[in-house]
View 1 (tube, rainbow, N blue to C red):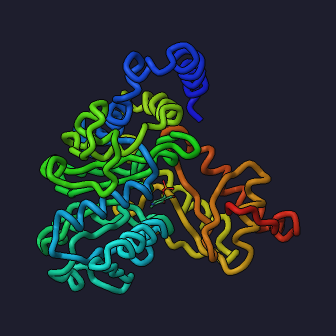
View 2: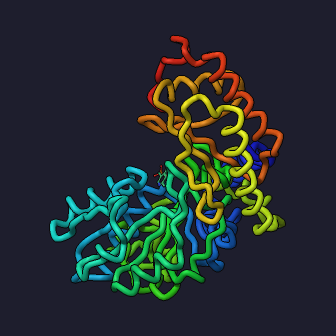
Length: 373
Ligand SMILES: Cc1ncc(COP(=O)(O)O)c(C=O)c1O
């Protein structure tokens, strides 16, 4: 948690909320927060000011974008997604297809070559820039070029990119992007997600979630929906001011970060972790599923292991090292270049060796599973 967040939340609750009451919608700029906070994310994803809206979850924003994309690109009617993408991307597409019977969902399998499946029916392609399991980076420019050459729209999920991996949406001429802010951006639990729409589309797309806060004049209370101009249309209902404020404070530290140095630090850290784990834990059956080539490696490192994956992550947590277990057998370690040090990386690798060498993980205490793994 960024140190500035508690103080900011105190100001928001005690001053803007308790004293300012509803006047803070104007006086504390609450109404404009989705765009003001979006302006702080824009430089991290290669977007410009007034192009990013922050609010709702990534899942909800996927729904808005996919719905807008199939409308914009009709009569094309197929949504193409990686079958192995983060499940919510697939679930949201399935939900949209249930609602709109003419829309179909097609999956890109790992063995498929994208160019071979880009038929004339595909309206939009949705992919993760950095894969949530392996951390493999999909080249944004060449993928977007291929998708657009086939007449489809390109929607990127930047959840594992933003704040750790270089990304240039405008240079790639992508059409849309979404992403969460609770990973490398440190926005906090349930922090609102972002949506970016290419400026060429921003005034012609139609969001399927036509809420009053995306209306051109919400306080005229007119019966019929008329979209606000630009990205503001993607703001659906009342913005989540408390969590937007925490995120806003967390984003302040990015203003003087040299992003090239940050991206470089991320790939050095992941390289160092891979090297160190392989030399310290080489005989414990870990299989690296993250690319060794730094050009296509995001900011996490994943290994599979045949036995005890869940328990190993729990045992590491008991030693103060926080990783993720991803079913069925993946140990995933994320490296936030903004605040982690190489000493932390070495420490994590040594603790992993300790857990594996001593079989610390092989204990009933580490087998208890909460709802969230
Ligand atoms: C690639 C990807 N997309 C979407 C999500 C889910 O986003 P949300 O919970 O904000 O809907 C995640 C969550 O980790 C993710 O990794």
